[in-house]
Length: 280
Ligand SMILES: [Zn+2]
Image 1 (cartoon, rainbow, N blue to C red):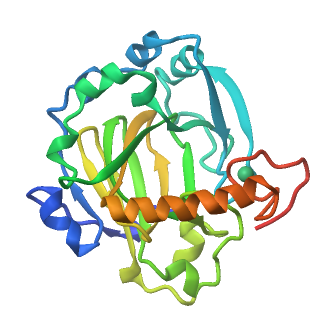
Image 2: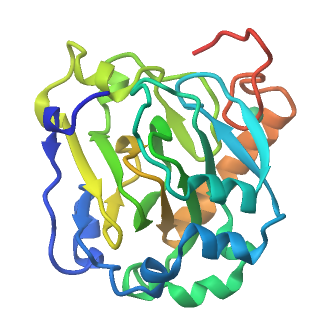
Image 3: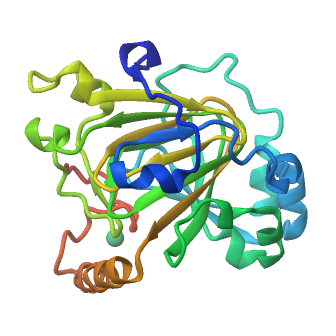
């Protein structure tokens, strides 16, 4: 595992995200959400109790960089497995952890919206899409960049973000052909990218989030993310109505082509790989 000390620490910013968003530079807003009821009340047990037998699909391992595989569980069974989760006795390279990603928590349980204070955070008039990332220690999202800006809120547990400037993956020739609807992927990890000839140290940052911290990740900034303990993060993708609408039309067109088998068939983050498939 790459150590955070190899990367420059991301500076903490005071004030509101709104004053900072125009810079298009990532920033951490320490404890900005610490007074949100979600941070004090969303235990794994509490979320599980809302619908213990709800079927959930879990992602297995690092699907951005490696194979795409899924496994089925229920919300109750999976969240029970996260209680008391720790790193002890595990190989740091282990990459088979299951991860409940992009979970539509707020649509499933609209009552939970009352535990959030998003109005303090998003620019007025923006379209937003919030989903939950719930997983054990060492669950990981491989290096990618999103198409929309993100204001992510750490609700529970600790999480490390490694960030690299726009263009770093492209210069290293590491853009992946693997399809993802709302992101672009790298076929190398952040550690390999940071070691590439084209890399310079001021392209790379790392930040560890604690519950209540908010992180701004601008669109096109590459990031790889790993849980330091079992946790819950709420992503908050947002943009102006015009930007989101035009992007959505493009994303939908590409997704239609993908699902028709005309764009990256069998090489994507949304369909499980066939056994033995090799691609980058
Ligand atoms: Zn797919």
